[in-house]
Amino acid sequence: MKAEEYQAHDATALAQLIHTGEVSAAEVTEAAITRAEAVNPSLNAIVVPMYAEARHVATKPGTGPLSGVPFLIKDLFQDYGGWPTSAGNAALRDMPVPEHAEIVRRWLDAGLVVFGKTNLPEFGAKGVTEPLTFGPTRNPWNLNHTPGGSSGGSAAAVAAGIAPAAGANDGGGSIRIPAACCGLFGLKPGRGRVPTGPRWSDPMHGAAVNGVITRTVRDSALLLDIMAGPEPTAPFAIAPPERSYRAELDREPGRLRIGVTTRSPLDSRVHPEAHTAVTSTATLLAELGHEVEEAEPDIDGHALTDDFLTMWFAQMAALVDWVKSTTGCTDSAFEPDSLMLAATGRATSAATYVRAHTRWHDHTRALLNFHRTYDLLLTPTIAGPPVTIGRLDPPEWLRNAERLLVRAHAERIVAATDLVLREVRTNLAATPFTQLANLTGTPAMSVPLHWTESGLPLGVQFGAPPGGEGLLLRLANQLEQARPWSHRRPSGLSLLSRGPA
Image 1 (cartoon, one colour):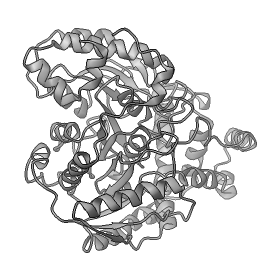
Image 2 (cartoon, one colour; image 1 turned 30 degrees about the vertical axis):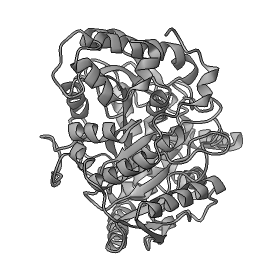
Image 3 (spheres, rainbow, N blue to C red; image 1 turned 60 degrees about the horizontal axis):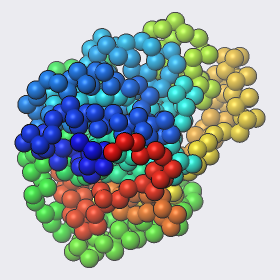
Image 4 (cartoon, rainbow, N blue to C red; image 1 turned 90 degrees about the vertical axis):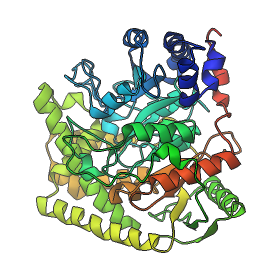
């Protein structure tokens, strides 16, 4: 199979070609590896190549719905037995895990051929993908810009035609932000819809979920069918969908009432291009027969962010302590930002943490009240075009202050200075719209309906009530037919080697 032909097909189409015998799984795998070897040196999307493993797997006959289709997994929560799961951390990058994660087992049972693991910020803690351990991943649409985070490696690889789809996960926007930055479709499932075990139970109280990033809606629907459902170690099981997600695409979404806002929940600046992306989408929705009006949930965005961050900081403290106890490493194995987040988490009292987590329920009730009137909420996915590499790095004086405070084990001083909270809020101003769905556990998606004047993608976000994955997919399918996007190819790839045809 030629590289150009390989890149032209989504996962569903490749599976059909393999099933009918027009191409073999081995040929398709070689095309994926050839593409990776041609462009990954410039993108840095794949940080753990698994080419020999993939070639071996591709020789075995498969019976799953995506048998023989090349696939990448994110190097966080998506354990592949016998290989390390680094989470972007230096101490974990050479430490193999003993068994597959349930989500990976389901992908393998479906016949997907995993040929690498993708880059992410350390512990998935940022909306850009610039870890010190592996170096930054670059956006195929413009190599000077970020592909977003934390699933930035997966998004860059799919956008660059290395794989038709890739594993991702989302604890604060980490599926939707990269999808928005790279011109892709990204659906964050609701809490409990997709497994996270067996090594992890309910990360971040269910705010973090596994999923995928794809070029087409039909691939996401089929992959959600493959992923969805409880596992034996799941802390709870939610009601299954009425029908398969793939079958949802055969149904019209109906006439929907959609509330729309471009106001940042943090009252920070929203770029004119993000406003244009939303207003253009609202116009398209009206043309398709939907009722669209300005509206937003009655939620204090600052309070929601603080309650979310209280959990985020404590999660980082627990992760850093776990890595130290597991590997015997010291602070030198972590990035300064991770250590500062962890120090802030340790300075938080248990009572403060419980009160913040209890308030999650108040935010959820307010969102559900909004959905009594509106089927969906439309916002920008991110507040502006993808930023340049390094743009969100803290100033050097702040980094130096962080190092001194961490070395002194001055957790309470760290918290009292408010340094970390101010830095994180500054970074969140670029991505203020995504945390709501994580905290409330509701499904949401980023749809690639807009490109800026400079040629960068800028997706829009739709949020649904609990159990609304099917509704989101039906609408996404309608939007994809009305304004197709999968044929678009990154202009930045003109700077990269095409590799052999």
